[in-house]
Amino acid sequence: MQENLATLIRNTAAQVRARDFAWAVGISGGVGVAVLLSGLGDWRLVILTWFFFLALLAIRFRLSSGRVWAAPVQRIVETELSAQEAELTTLRMARDVAEALPEPLFILDATGVVEHANPAAEKLVGAKEITGRHFAAVLRTPSVYEAVEAVLLSNDPATVEFTMMGAVERSCRAYVAPIESGAELSAGRQQRALVFIRDLTSERRVEQMRADFIASASHELRTPLASVIGFIETLRGHAKSDPEAQEKFLAIMQSQAERMQRLVSDLMSLSRIELNEHVPPKDIVDVADVATDVIESLSPLFERAGAIVDLIKDTDEATKIVGDHDEIFQAVQNLLDNAVKYGGDPAMIKLRVGRGAAPALTGEGDPGYRAGDAAAQVAARTGTRVDDLVYVQIRDFGPGIERADLPRLTERFYRVNIERSLKSGGTGLGLAIVKHIINRHQGGFQIESRLAGGTAFNCYFLVAAKNL
Image 1 (cartoon, one colour):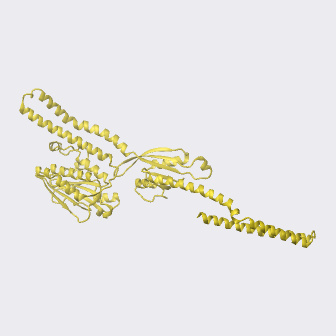
Image 2: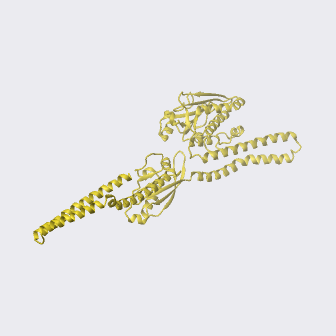
């Protein structure tokens, strides 16, 4: 390109020289004619002078090459091109830095239209190719756009905190700043605004988890701790020499200690899941394989409880999802453990894996009641078809659950039957853990129950894209 530019400059210089030579010939000839017409000189002398002038012009034209004529212009052009290339290199580096940033970044023009958005920004709003769209339509958060308008008017940076609603609530902070300075604006450049967004969800969750953990632990551990302390005092007192009482009280103390251990374990598990709930998993997991592994790992529990568990795969299509194997395993395990405890004596359980909408409870008796996300709701929220969902259904044939209790089953420490829950060793956190796991996987959780007809827990996940 640089060689072509040099050739173009030389050719242009040659044309300019030829044009100047023609003008010099014409002007000198015109002067000679004027002298002849005015009678101020002999015509032979005039013609001889004109030819002598032309000879000198020709010699000058031949001695000054086009390269010499073009050199100054070429130096100016090359200097300008070098400056532009340096500026383009800086711009490319700035663009690459923006693309590599893990935090969302938007650049808006004076009217609020998005001129640039990095991949993290597209991921934040869940849309591609947002350049050219108005910022208010891209990030539907009025407080942030109001800050953008204020910055464009005042030329002063601003910071605003906001919350993004969705399957998982996200806390964010937006830093809005003008890009052009006063000197650049006075030179006619248009004002632009930079919007940099930082996700504060993890920090907020840590703060909330700390408060929740302290409150939950202090509340739930108070009773078993008081019981253990009471028995210790008894053993050190009048039961000190009573082997039978010692054996009885030690067994109760062990039971209470195991309950506290389960409670702390579940609280820690729930805290870990909540901390990463806003971060979608990335691994590929086959739900049918996970269900098989859970049944095999819990087989001793089923044998002790006399429970009967059937695994049914309702489809020949792929049941792979984008998920976290350990969390899916834990969710299915919690639901099966719950079904063993409350699904009758002995419990009969069906674990089904399939595609689309999970089978509904059927049979005679009272109608079934539902709480949570149906398959159609999950499909609408994720922008996909119902047939592209993978479900895991754990159904028991126990006494069922009252309609008023269904919406509250996923609350922390909520128990339908407190006495039976404490007797079976339940902590009241199992279904809350399942709910948060499914939230992290951007799926849906539905509970359907019918009095005297059993209960079905339906977990919905979006099938992995390559299996669509």
